[in-house]
Image 1 (tube, rainbow, N blue to C red):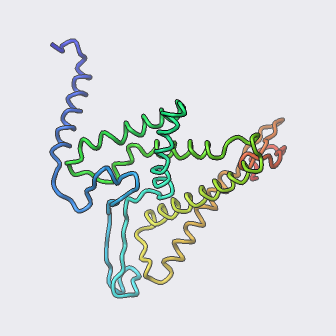
Image 2: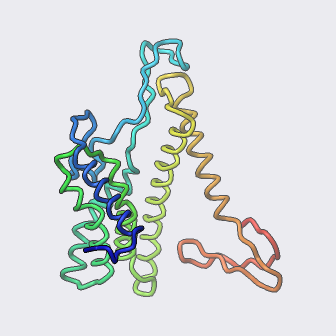
Length: 243
């Protein structure tokens, strides 16, 4: 009856069905399994690695230390994203903003289907399926809150400073997570552990700032530079320029 369907498409569909059936059969209890209700606040993150070295092992200078890698999303993004959901629904249903409707649709498409599998063994890190929509939701509401510069320049500038602080905090948390994961589970109880973590965060932030301060100016061209939307100057030098 489906002989007219190309073999490659039928094979793809069979593969999807097999994955679905296997996924439905995974229901063994696990210490870190969760319900989708807590995903948007990153409740019960999954532990990927844990060791408890004793004194003298891996630089541990107390009785027992802890080295762990846990899949906790950046709190300033996920918690803010959870708070933005009511705003998105309001802007979509009452303000008739199609952009909010598109974000709600993306959020729902990546999140709601998991409730069908709430009886199987699932984990918080599955929320990565709709993480881009969380980031877009936060970005959208920030844009609404900041508003247009021409409406009130002073208020616009103050709010951009608040947003800049929020972004720096988010980068610091993100950089700290990368450093702790790449370098390896850091024993904070051992000498110099916290200092190494702080220095790693600072180093990553400085590298990000330097990387975004580099611009290329072609011969006969100029580059207008802005900081949080405000004009700060014009680069007329040719070549690779560090602002």
